[in-house]
Length: 338
Image 1 (cartoon, one colour):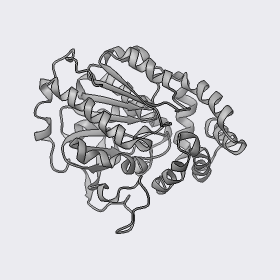
Image 2 (cartoon, rainbow, N blue to C red):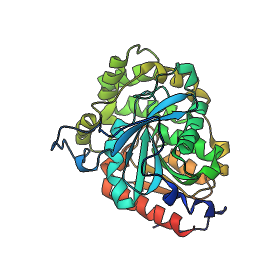
Image 3 (tube, one colour):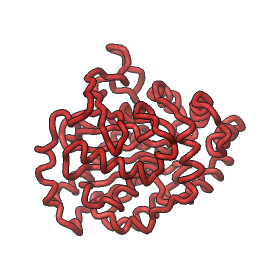
């Protein structure tokens, strides 16, 4: 049940955001073709709703780099932050596009600096601090005062940091399968050791110990451990189909794992988050378990916790109807406070 509480700060500055959001954001270039869509008439699975794919792609000039972005739907601008690190937003477009129409949102997906189809900057320029600054840069490039932010997995880490550092830039925050500190790594390793097959365990270790040296081996290792992310293992194969065109970059992943994750801890910043926040997690999430979500919920002032009982790391995929309903209820309560 959604509990509607009044925000601790005024949200009146958000009132004109929908009207001011242009039909297409100002960008360095816009390509209206859909690079993520399959062949005409093709629908690969429930994860690939071809009728609700990208409306267009664009390039955003942000903080001295160029970011690849796509938009889906019409309505309130919502920045969708992909996970990883080292992958891109292509799979997330397929997974989240069905939210746009029923929730009245314009979903804005982009590949983080140094990732995917964005410019591959030197990895030293891809710190989490810089990536958070880039989120603010994307908001400014879109020409809107405030945005909804939806962060999945590692994208949720960045979303938490962003909301703590730029609290007046958000209407709402939704994080899915996130953690507020690097403490999740030890738990994830214990869970992987217990649940993984020998091949999955070897792949897991290679993804975290820096031994992978090329992008193709990164892709294969991630495909091997993919079933661990799902409560319903049958969805793992469908998920891989939806992510078939993901661009992998092991160099940026290794940099962030080695130099960013060990020091990652935004718990002290969470009390600064001033917007309604939904913390979502799958009951069977092995990498960012329920207790990580509970910690975030306890530290964020205006937060709600949603545990999806038949999901692993991706409740937005495994329990999509329930996820859409829960997010819709949350956004309805948030809008009622304006």
